[in-house]
Length: 101
Image 1: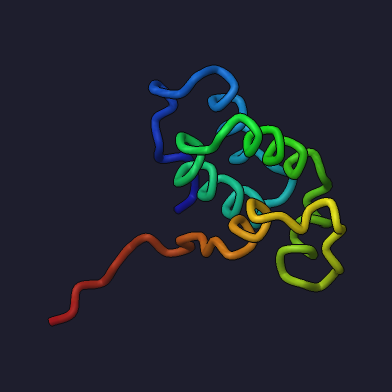
Image 2: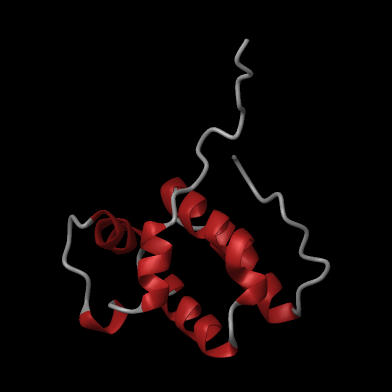
């Protein structure tokens, strides 16, 4: 998956902004992780989870990648269920499926 595939037509303005920002990060790895996470989860997140997601997304991409991969210790403020859901999310780097014969 190389970009947004979910329509934002059914989302409120806040969720539209978050979805756009999730796909337009500083580094491509975070585009794929946050973008695909947002596409899958954004519509069902509570207001408190949206607040938390926006705080996470305000962090530097290099820090986020290091926290997600475990290369750098995760700050206590982000040791939350939502962050762990993001970190556990496995983006679909190759959406093309080959048929077996």
